[in-house]
Image (cartoon, rainbow, N blue to C red; front, side):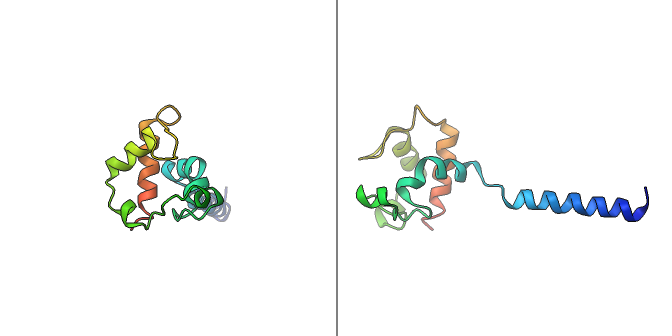
Length: 107
């Protein structure tokens, strides 16, 4: 195999892998999108139809911002207000990862 061919193949492999990595999302983001986004909105602003109808507080609300990670995890695990409990639907790790992703909206 010539150097030119080998270098071309290597360049193509690098480009394909780079494209794959850029589209990867964290497990917390994936869980949030699958289970939380319908009410809490794409960016945690509770601007979805369901979020507005249920009067979900956005991540920017002072009451939400002051919640600790442990309080948020407990709310997701056991439910809070109109929000259903996810303890039987998600693992503790999935809940923690989704809360971690949601908390990026509170900053």
